[in-house]
Amino acid sequence: MKRFGKKLRKLREGRGLSYSQLAKALGFHRGHLANIEIGARIPSVDLVEKIVEYFEVSFDEMMDDKMDVGTRG
Figure (tube, helix red, strand yellow):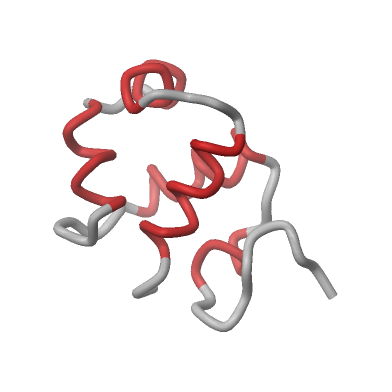
């Protein structure tokens, strides 16, 4: 879970999205997402579910610190 914010940033930047664009798409405040990316907040289960659905990654990819996003199996 320590790498969640870094993974989120990689996904967001990989799609060329600003905090505001992603926040609007997920229904969360941009500041909340920014705080998660820098590790100042822990994401709720609801937010994690929205992120994995939006970016089409697995829950395990986001939550497991040993896994990188986009590298399955």
